[in-house]
Length: 121
Image 1 (cartoon, rainbow, N blue to C red):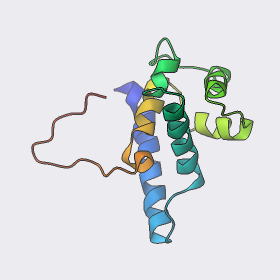
Image 2: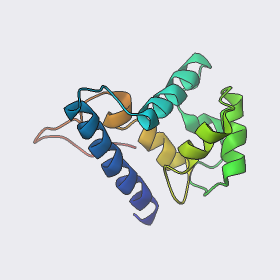
Image 3: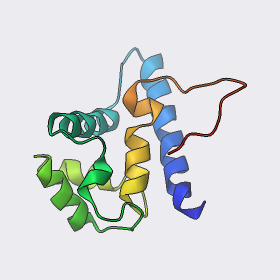
Image 4: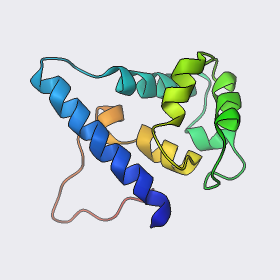
């Protein structure tokens, strides 16, 4: 549970950012757009998700390790990479994968049903 706490905080923040942008007549925010760019790059390079780029998705990684993985996706802007890295603290690829799959980033509405079961993520 401790490893998911940074993700919960970030997802709440991004949900609020998307709601604010929507209220202002905008589709997204620069931060969400950068995350969506990562998803697009992953798909264009044939990856199912970000965790295929790392041996241990749950390990806390440094910004330099993250930067090296982003370079594999041809994302080389150091400012953008730094912003992406700072979305989670501590940073793990498992939580980054979950963030990339979140409704705020994927544009998919959250699944709500009285018979819904827990997500396998």
